[in-house]
Length: 501
Image 1 (cartoon, rainbow, N blue to C red):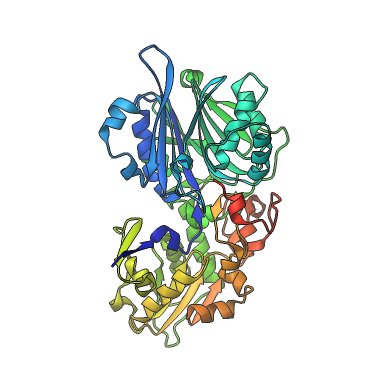
Image 2: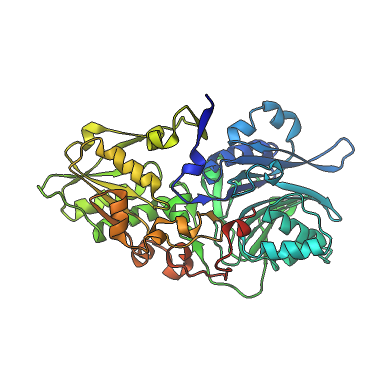
């Protein structure tokens, strides 16, 4: 009998973020610091990881050495010899990869990418998605470019290498002026670490300092694990350069990609789901935003027990934990009897692929990942707080699992609006027809029936934006909820054609 495999990454009923990036300059054990940083950013990509370092060979020439492979960071870099004898040098960049459809089976697509061209060595790691990658790729191929991967990141490399400017910063700026979409880049040259962020600032990118070294990372949790100090964000539309002069003077060189400034369009899902709650992104702590989301969710969409007993508030661990805290605290402020409980226990020891010999995945479903605390749930009115619903398949299985604990009622509250449109700026949503809200034409009652809950309520877009404390509502991209894309995309083109990263 052949084994059957349950792919956890594929079964996630959540949006997936494409990647996490990390770079460090001015540290003798740069690769090891990068390893720790990528470990902290593991949630941003679990398919593959890579690290590139810059060091001198026996002839005194600058060489780039790298190691990358499929798997988690701890699986890819499990040989101490890598850090002691191979990945040496004071500068390094790293990348965690979440693959998209069609590119998962090629090791060539694992970043960072490394090339040698007329201006020297160049390594690039990218988080985001270019909306005009297909168009640029066709033009480059027509001009004679040979592509080794299916990644949109390689488009950026070709544009830099083919730039007619002599200065590397000018080459990079020339390339970035030709691309559209969402991107956060860390670029390593023979003598510089360069960070760049798209003009709208879709994805987060932060700068920190560890003693005399400088770090660039997708989130501040990658600074924390290295005991580094957060300095500031890489600004939208900024190219930030770190070199020996930076180490001596403690100041950055900063350049604008375009002279005119674009409006900020941060990805709101970074606060809702992607980023770790202990991170600070877009200038605000993620935990603070998620608590606010939960509080407004409770204020606008409360639940009471018909018999006046305490409502039991539980989360779908781990991403909804903070919102559930905010939800219950607001219910208490409103005088609604309630108690925050751990009603679902999540297994953290599954691995990315679970073997199911002779058993269909649908028969075991979410029980692989979750189990209920029956004593907490039995004969109770339950409020299940979750951050989002994409397909709805996992939510449906989870509700059925909760029913086995014999609760009085199950009320589902979602700390984001219904997802009705795919994302083209660095999130891997399924096709629009797979989205449960699109499938049911945003009819909440029909979705409720499908999920088999007693009540279902989402936040509205306005309520969600009200939760974005310290920010103007206009600073956020809400395309997946509204279908209004801040950068034009060709509606109707398949996700696979856009998501070539």
